[in-house]
Image (cartoon, rainbow, N blue to C red; front, side):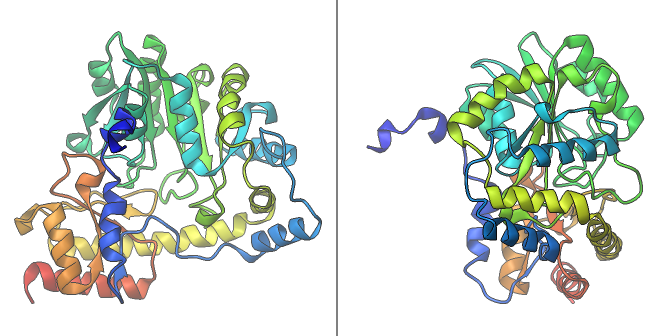
Length: 382
């Protein structure tokens, strides 16, 4: 019966990240710089709020849109970034991942083109392909891993429906600054295309205040905004995120959520509500810890001899390992086999990046130091 599986599924590759970590999972005592997941436990007050909601018997469906009080709190929170979305313009989703899927399914028709600046988080292209749309990739490595307005303009055709932004970026940690986003927004408005902006790392910026393309005048009608609680609030396993857009767009996208999901887990919604109300001090402490680790790993990788663009957001660094003469896949496998250190091959984030690896610094200072020592031994044969 395998021949009866949908062609759109058969044509896409499995996740390069998950494929590699199937190998990692077979080994013991690995120092992992691979997992894009906070090593912090969810703050206790958030966990307690979830317990309390269960004790109160709050175990039933919520509105398809999500708890009204959570959407109200998200609306207040987004004003921090000068984003004006009321509670009727927000859908609470099962993680940011559902938001990505919902946004793409809501706007793409077969034959549409969607511009994907690479390297980038892995799901966007496969999901677009499954919809019979065409991902049009832009290699940003020559521009410091930043999408420019000029490159965007160059790749727009009559079939272009949208562009995806993921800044702070996974896997590079690069951010886009206000002036750069203003230039990009002019191209978007000129051609009247959608902008899907995934800002799940907005709280994890280290030298600049995060700026959202959605706050630029006239951009709300073109923007589908995605965010979530997984990274900043250390809530990956709670699977809770949200999508925000103009009311007319939300009224269409909610249909996908109604039929596929119904509502996000209720206890996770109450946990997220507590996070927004009372956990920002913990978020600040986690950000400060990541910043210390960021400086350590960038310095360490440069000392080893790698070329490293300094990440100014997220929890990753994306060094160029071409000096080793190994491909990213070869490097990652040999490093794991010889030194028990796990990293992610760069070509998981785009085929152009076979000379890069992604290292996550969402692990302890001690583990980062030991991993750097082992990588140094591996590369420089000490």
